[in-house]
Image 1 (cartoon, rainbow, N blue to C red):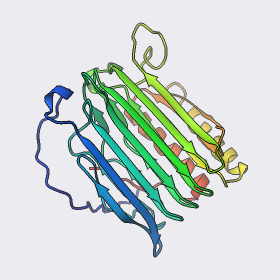
Image 2: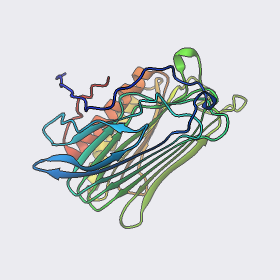
Image 3: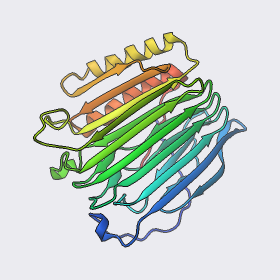
Length: 303
């Protein structure tokens, strides 16, 4: 595996402090906003305009391969989200640009007593641009309440590779499916009016014998790949590759690949262990990138 040297963008110094376990332990509510406009210049994607407010920060673009793709790490130096916090991201990818959004660590959601923590992601992807959304999982602590909305608007020829992941809790502490509620909505909109939507609300009830709560599934992920101009042969080939990946881990992974109402593929997976979960993401992402972009996945170094 090749090694990449990663340079971190300058950011304000941080003071180390213990993380709150609930919304009552923090003196103020956080309302973070992040705006990004991205464009292709001289063969590389750059950020032409940007603005962020605490607790959102982002690293300046890293270029991890020959494609000119701008990789940025979205960070929350406060340690996590508590009740009443709201974080929003609005990003526009101009024509022919290519951005990979990721995070250096999981998004933690602390125990919530009143209002939920809320996060909204709004991605606007212009013609022939490529957007990859590959964050680390969200970890809701016991008693946490979290609401997330991800909206992606794709213009003609735009490509999307999107991964959204949830951990059952702080697994190493024996904390599984003990959060209060987790509401998630993902919408992918095409210019002709077609759309893909995944929506669910989880309120763990251990008297209800349904998956994933009744078995030892600790991680849940959704993977979407969409492009309205790709030929059907592309989806057939990628679907076959992804199905092979899932079926090769029978017993360790529960999952499947489907064809949604938009040109693309949708994958849902459950795993018991973090290594299996990470390996599954890597192999699905590799299949998607090779099939749609004819490129291998970059090497991400997280700190």
